[in-house]
Amino acid sequence: MVSAAEQLAANLNFSALAKADELKKRIWFTLGALLVYRLGTYIPLPGIDPNIWEQVFRSQAGGILGMFNMFAGGGIHRMAIFALNIMPYISASIIIQLLTTVSPQLEALKKEGEAGRKTLNQYTRYLTVLLAAFQSYGIAVGPRRRRQCRQRSRHVLPALDRDHADRRHHVPDVARRADHLARHR
Image (cartoon, rainbow, N blue to C red; front, side, top):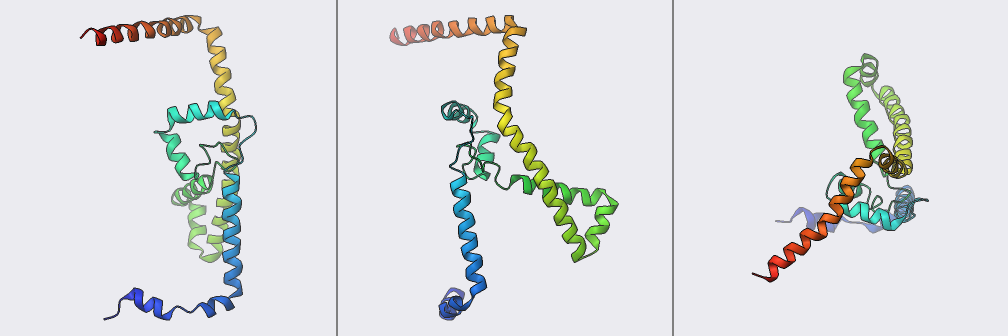
């Protein structure tokens, strides 16, 4: 009895692959797109300090930031220009699918067949561009705004800043006491 893998290997014909020009073009395009994408995940965003971002990423890597980094192929960890990856398209596609159940006009488009599907795909692309613009703006401006908010809060709430400073000086005392207890056991 011959297995499916053995049958596939016996019927594999590389000469037919050499003649398929359209397939070769598609394969080369896919490899080129992958190469461009991988290079784009190593080009950092301007204005991002890599050392500070590394500290932020390490402190938040186990949470949602780590999950986004996984989907972005490491682009968020390096804060690269292609950090968004395909997440805006996936989000837009989910939103359009959910809207087809709510909106009678979109539901009618879905039932039209091929023409309706093309229209829904076009709406998905438009929404993808919109979501990508908002998300890229958030990535570009978010760290600066967070830093500005921290600076403003120090002026508005000095009591909190003093409390934080007191805790900062308290930590070495606790560490010194723990060290003292560990030595004298």
